[in-house]
Amino acid sequence: MNIGVLGAGSWGIALTKLLSGNGHNVTVWSIDKEEIAMLNEHREHLTKLPGVKIQDGVTFTTNVEDACVDKQMLVMVVPSPFIRSTAKTIAPYVTSNQIIVNVSKGIEESTLMTLTEVICDEIKGATVAVLSGPSHAEEVGKEMPTTVVAGASTKEIAELVQDTFMSDFFRVYTSPDVVGIELGGALKNVIALAAGISDGLGCGDNAKAAIITRGIAEISRLGCALGGQETTFSGLSGIGDLIVTCASKHSRNRNAGFLMGQGKTYKEALEEVKMVVEGVYSAKAALKLSEKYNIEMPIVKTVNEILFHDLSAKDAMVMLLTRMKTAEDKDLLWK
Image 1 (tube, rainbow, N blue to C red):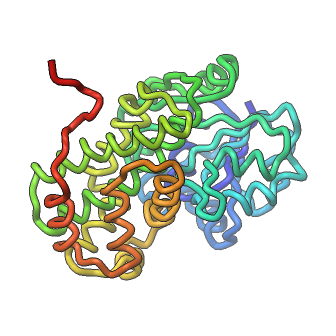
Image 2 (image 1 turned 45 degrees about the vertical axis):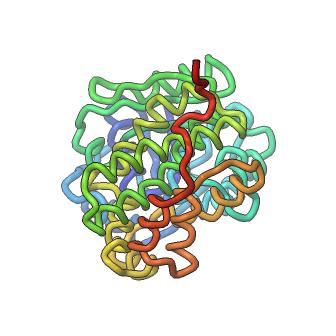
C-alpha cells in the first residue's frame, strides 16, 4: 500500500518505521524544512526519537501534494491544535477512495469537536478511522510489544486499518466505537497531568492509583454522555491508555504535571518538556463539555484551576480530598 504520513514528530516517525517494516511504501510530510532535511540526511529524528533508524525506502518531503496524491491511506499525526489547519491544507488532494487514519489525540477547544469531526468538517465526505491505545513512540520505535485499537464506521475499514498496522510486535484490535476511542485518548491526557502533579508533590502510589481510578470514572461518565460505549473505557483506549500516560517516564503529560507539582507554571513546564503537551489543550474543552452535559468531573475541573487560575498544586490536592462525601458508584443500591 502507498501511505502518506502527515507529521514527522516522534509518533509519526515510530509509525513510519512500523508501516515501512510491514512492507508499505511510506512518504512522510512535515511543514518544517529543517526537520525534513535532518530526516533525509540522518534517517533518524535526532531530537524527538533518537536511536530509531528509518528504512531507506521511506521518502521525506515538505510538499504536501507528494504525501497525499496516489496514496491509499493517509495517517494524521500532527498535534491536535494543528489538525484543522492540516486537514484544510490536504483537502484539495484527498479523494473519496482514500482512508484517513487519525492517530492524534485531543478535542478542539473552540468547537468541542473530536478530531475526526474536525477532519470531516474540513474534508467533506472523507472516510476517517482512528487508531489509539497505550503506545508510546519511544517503545514502538524500538519494536517493543504494543497493543492498540482501530475504530471505524464499518467493520471493513477497521479491519483494513488493522491489517495495515498489525505486526509481530504491534497488535491491533477493532471497534465500531469511534467516539469512545477518541474521547478516551483525549481525556486521559488531562488526568495524566493530575497524576504528574501528584508525583511532583510527592503524594505516592496510593494517590496516583486514586487519580487513575477516579479519572477513568470521569472519562466514562462524559464519554457515555457523548455517545461512547462504557466497555470502550475499560479497554485499550480507555483505562489502558490512561495507565501508561499516568505512569510512564515517556509521558509528556505526566512529566509536565510533575514539574507543575514541583511549583512551575504550566508555561514553564511546557518549555522544559519541549514537546506538545496535549492535556493542556484538551483541559478547557473537557471542562466545557462537562458543563454542557452536566457531568461531574472534579479532577478535570481542578486541573483547569491549576493551569489557568493559579490554584497551587498543594491546595488542589487538599480540595479534591475534602470534597463532599459521596458513594463510589451512585448507581449501586443497598439491599
